[in-house]
Length: 444
Image (cartoon, rainbow, N blue to C red; front, side, top):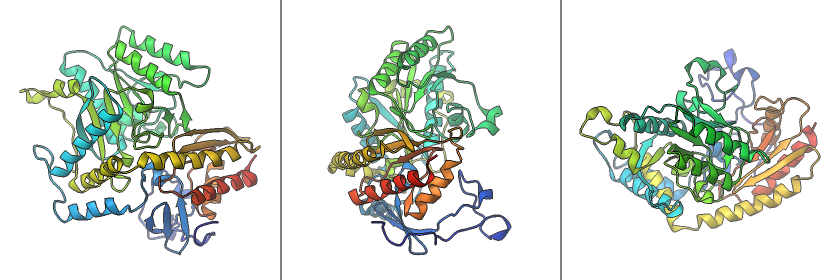
C-alpha cells in the first residue's frame, strides 16, 4: 500500500520568467521544467510534501540519512548544542563536541579496521568533496615535507569523488566535468575490476607503482563505485589493491563518503577486506545525515610529517565552519547510536528485505544485472539507446516513481535503492513495486 496521498498533484515550481524563485538546484536541468516537489517535513523514511502527499525516501536524500529523518536523539543533541556554543574558530581553539567526535571516530575505526599502524588523527571539513580535497592535500603534503618528489595520483576507472576541482580531477572524465577540463590535473587510471578483468586491474596498478616516477597515492571508493553506476567489486580485490600500495609505499586513500556508516553492510567498507587505509574520508552519514560535516582520518606518519617548529610545513587547509560545534554534536550523537544500539542488526535486516525484493525483479525481461551490497541494491533497465548518465530513461523513471510516492533518482538506466535503516518491510515492498511497475511500463 502506498503511504499517504499519492498522485501527480505535487506543487510544481516552474522556472525562468514564470516564477519568482531564485533557487538554482544541483544536478537539475531547469529548462526541462520537471516537477520539483515542495517538501515541508520529514520523519523516519518518509518525506511529507506541502500538498499532503507523502514520499518514501528510497535513496536517503542523496545517500546521507542513516537512522531516519529527524531522529530524536540527533535532533536533541543539535538543539542542546545550538543553545550552548554555536560556532568557534577552530584554528588554535577547540571544543568538546569536536574532541568527542574525533575520539569516537578513532574508536570505531580501530575496532573495525584493526591494524598495528591505525588511523590516529582526524581533520574536520564540511562535505565529501572537501574531505577528498583534504586527503589529496595530506598525501601531497606528506611527500613534500619528507623531501620526496611524488605528485601523481592513481584513480579507478568510473570513479566519482565529488565536484570541487581536486575531487573532479580524481574522478572519471565525462559529462560531470567536461566543461571544467582546463582546471583539472592529470591522473593515472587503473581499470574497474569487472568480472574476468581483475588481474588486469592489479597488473596495471603494479606497473604504475613501479614506474620511474613513483606515484604519491591511490584513491578508491571501496567495494562499490557510486555515481559511476553502482558498480560492485569483491573485497579480495580491494585487499589486493591495498597490498600493492603498501608493498610499494604508495599512500592508500579510501573514499568512504558514501560507503561508510553501514551502507555496504559494515560500518566501513574497508572492514570487509580487512584493510586499514593510510587516509580515510568520511561524510554523509557522519551526522546521521542531519547536518553537513566531514572528516579525513590519517595515520600518525602523515600527521607527523606536517608537525614541526617550522610554520611553513603546517597543513594549509580550513574553512570558516571547520568542526562546527552544532554539526559535531550531531555526529557525536550518531556515533553513540552506533556504539550503544544494534544498528548492525537493523542494517542486516534491511539488507535481507531488500535482497528478497531484488530477487523477484531479477527475472523481469526489461531488467538486468541485479546486484546488492549491504543496504544498496541496483538493477539496470534494458535500453535501446546508449546507456549512461544522460540516458533518456532516467527522468522518465524518476517521474514515474514520484507519481507512486517513491523518491528514486536513477543513474541513467541504473535504478538503485539505498533507503534509511528504519525503512519497514512494507515500505521496501512499495519501493520495489514501483520499480517493477516502471519496468512494465517503460521497458524497451
